[in-house]
Image 1: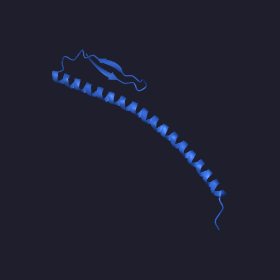
Image 2: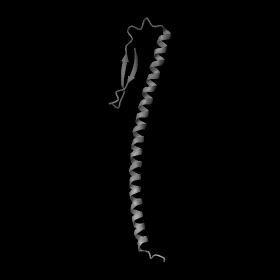
Image 3: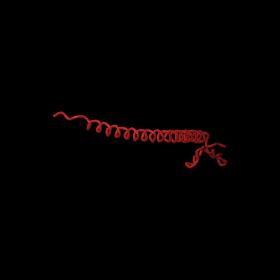
Image 4: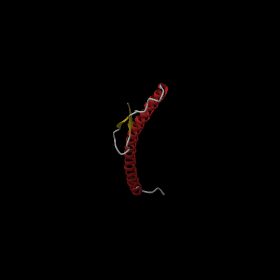
Length: 95
């Protein structure tokens, strides 16, 4: 009996599914080895997918924070421009 990880995208955790090979007798040992190798590769891809999903969530949060910071800095810059223009208006003009 072999196990294979399955992923439901709506759930955060993986559920282990057991693959029962009751009719595995007709397969050669080489075929069993290939199936085991394929199973391991599928598990690695599933784990990589989960890692990338977590990284994607973290990167999206970082992007949102950077966008909010950028918006605040743009607002502050515009306010500084207004204050600077108001100060320039109070200076006497050279004729």
